[in-house]
Image (cartoon, rainbow, N blue to C red; front, side, top):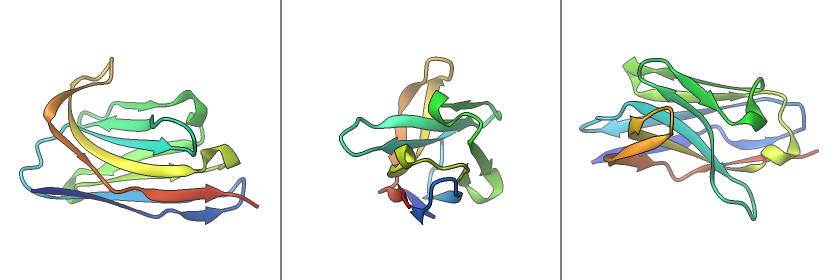
Length: 125
């Protein structure tokens, strides 16, 4: 069984920063990419950032230049550093560990696709 768990959400003022962490545990950990997604109130879930085992990264246009995804393979952990936060970044953020079959098209292979329960980020003054 595999478990994925996020931490680090909370309330922050506009312009502030937060760092989310995500840890995967259990076995087998046969995945090749981490992803951070978010679901804002009344909206569909969207991919915020992803990082592949080879180091490739991708970001949603709305967060480019403000958010940074990273990982520590030795700890099976991923991070999302969020700077210059805006009220529109308010959402539940979900961590995903998955096996991707097509990085360019963002397609998953299936078979290994695990999600955390989410952590709430609220950006408000």
